[in-house]
Length: 474
Ligand code: UD1
Ligand code: CA
Image (spheres, rainbow, N blue to C red):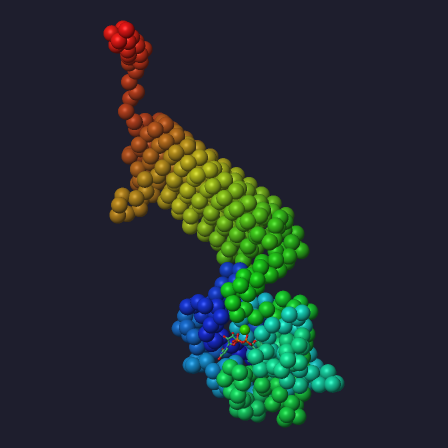
């Protein structure tokens, strides 16, 4: 089937009452991306065009979150059921009657592209008017039940709330994913009636109507029951996220990444872990994070849009955002690397060090307790413990330059804008307010005063006065 022969409609207008949340259900995140994003990726991978999203509850927020993605939006206000959602979108898909219409519930974040492809393949091969995805569940709960004829054909879908006791015992459920031939769908769509327990127009009633019109309805059973998890509650969202987390980790492990504990490791949809990289437990790789070969991350690290070079180590309890860490560099434990920072190859950032908009040159070190912001440190520099760049004057931010091989003594403050030249030294405890030329030593502290014998004289004076008072008491 050529990709352009499919169009898609994603149903995302429902209030999501069971989430008990002010936010639209499809915007709730799972593995760092809104539920709708997961569905959209599956649909896009099938080559659907156009893709229309039916919005209603929090429509503005949903449209804003997915603006610029080439989607069409249809407003369904008020939402009167899944069948009504398709009815109000009629103009969108009726315009292309030759393209098979995929209809997908927006609350199916576990839907796989492969399953969509299998559904479309069966639909095309059998020539059915409609084909739906079903799953066998031990506990079919509130899902719509798929009713079959004696010969095995799909006869109808009955919602759990409307099912007889016998129908409710059925274990094959409707997953909420359908392929329709548009002319056949248009013939019956107007016939839906809200005569059911919820007073809604059910899309699922289309199945019975198509059968009554003499059309065939087929079904594909999903192999993985988890895939049909329709998220209606916060607890179901947590379960979907758990399954997505494991699925993502499994895919990366299959390609050689060492994920030590997939259950506690969050690797977002767009994060990449190369072969032979090690991700230790309780670590979060978010956004466009990339961890290259041989690097290790964690435990308890959080990386957002960070690129970690080959053989680099991000040690325990670090937070890194929008930054690049060079090959074989080490960061942490307990380091905070803020946006627009670059750490050079073999550089070292130690515990309780914060970098902001700072480029630390190759082989440079900031091993302990520092804040370095708006700075450029050349290669081979040494930033002593407790060094602070005073980059902010209360109104503006100013830059600090520390050139190649410079040595900043412990507990120095560098008052920006300021430059410490190549190979220069700054004595420990200095407040540096003026540029230090290359090769110089700067001392910005008061000279030490030594008073010989002062402490022993004081001690002697104290002991004689206390023995005096003791004598008086006796
Ligand atoms: C639906 C199916 C049920 C199936 C289950 C699978 C119907 C009547 N029932 O039930 O057979 O087993 O999904 O998860 O379709 N929506 C709209 N407009 C509306 C109502 C809903 O766009 O007026 C959207 C929702 O935002 C949601 C999707 O349609 O993304 C499904 O709606 P929901 O209320 O969750 O349906 P279920 O009761 O789960
Ligand atoms: Ca649902």
